[in-house]
Figure 1 (tube, rainbow, N blue to C red):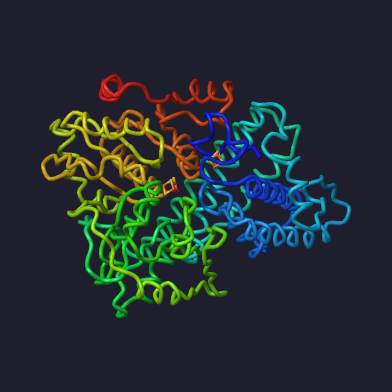
Figure 2: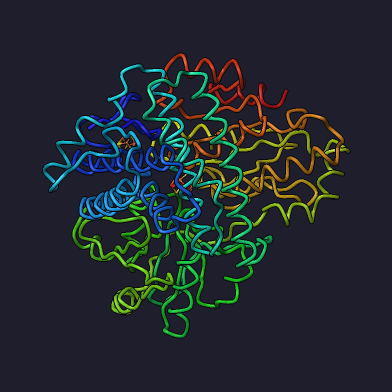
Length: 540
Ligand code: FSO
Ligand code: SF4
C-alpha cells in the first residue's frame, strides 16, 4: 500500500505498511482500485461525450465512492469490494454504448474476485504516476474532489444537486489518466476544483439552512442526564433528524460527538427535548470517550477510529459512506429512510453516560447570525475594539504539535477574535476566552463545510468597508488540516483569491517541493512556526 492523503501520513511521507489511521493494506488497495475504476468511468464519459444529466444513478454512486475513500470513513473491505463491482457494472454498461471510442485500461480492465482486485490494485495506486510533480498535482485535485464529494453527498441527501459538480468530477478524474497534461494544465484544474468546491459548499449551505433553518447563537450543554443514550458523530444532518424522530418518546437521549456538535445551532433540532448536548471532543478522542459514554454510537460519516475491542465494536453502528467490518451498517431505502430501531433497542439495555465535564459552549455564528450582528461587528472594528480576526477553521488530529493551536488561541491579544469551523475548534472552544463588547472571542460557524459561512462573512465585510480586495480585510488565516475536506476548503479559499493562508501543523506530504513552491509563490501559502512569532506575524 501507499497512501499520503492525510496530515498524519507516516513519517510525513506516506503510509506503506499500515495506515496511521488503522487502514490496512487490503482496504488501501481496494480504495486505489475504486478510484482507478472511477477514472475509467470518467474517461468514458468525457471521450464519449456522454450526457451527464441523464446518468443520475451513476453520478450519485461516483460521489458516494469518492466519499468512501476519505480518511477514516470506510474500513470495510467487503463494502469497498461491493462498491468496485457496482462501479464496474456502471462502467461496462456505459462503455458498451460507446463503440468506436478509444479508451484506456482504466475503462476496460477486468477482475473476477477479490484476489484479482488486489493484484490489479498494486499497479494503479498513487505511485503509478512516476513524475512526482504530476503525481502531486493529480493527488491534490483528487483529494479536493473527495472533499467536494462529501459535501455534495450531504446536499444530495437533502435533495439538492448540481450538474456542474458531476461534470467537473468526470473531467478532472479523466484528466488524471491523460499523460499529455503538464503542470500548468493541472494547476488550472486545481483552481477549477476550488471553484467547484465553492459551489458544493454553497449548495450544502442552502440545503442545510432551507431544511433545518439558519444556525443561531446557542449554548450547548456538555454535561449529561441520567437516561440511556445514543451518541451520533460525523456530518450528516438528515441522519440526525431521522434518529431524533425515531428516539422521541422512547426514553433514550441523543448526544452529538465531534463534528455533529453544530447541529445544536439549527432551529429544527432544538425542538427535541431529548437532544441533550454534546459529549466529548474531536474525533480522535473517541477511543476514550466512547468507553465512558457507555451507549451505542452512530457514525454518519468520518472520522471513525478503529474500535479496539469487540465490546466497543458491538456498540458502533455505521451508515452512509462510513463502515467498519464487524460493526452493524444501516442502509437507507430508496427514499433515504433509515431504520435505527436496533440502535435504540441496544441503548435501552445500556447504562446512562458517565459525566466527563459540565457546563456549556457557545456557537451558531454562521453567516446569517453574524450578518444579523453586522452593525455591532463593524462598529467594533471601526472603534478598534476588534483589531484582527483569525480564521482558525479545519480539523483536529492526534499529533502533539497541534497544542500549537491551543497556545495560539490562549495568547492572542484581547482585541482579536477567532472565526472557526470544523473540528479544529476543540483545541480552544472550552477555554473561556471571553468576549469583546458582547461578541464572543471564538465564533463557531459550524462544521468544516461551514467554512463557506466564514467566506460569506468576509465578502460581506469587504463590501461594508468598501475594499477592493478580500486580502485587505483585517483577517488572517491559520488553518489546521487533517483530511480531504480540508483540502477542498483550502482550494476554495485559493480560488476566491485569499492569500497568505497558513496551513498546519505540517504541510501535506502529497505536495512535492515544486508544487509546494508554486503554492508559496502564487498564493503566499505558509505553515506554522513558534506561537509567539506567529502571533506577531498574524497581528501585524
Ligand atoms: Fe473533522 Fe474528521 Fe469535518 Fe474532517 S471530523 S477531520 S475536515 O472529518 O470533516 O472536521
Ligand atoms: Fe496514512 Fe492518512 Fe492514508 Fe490513513 S489516510 S493510510 S493515516 S496517509
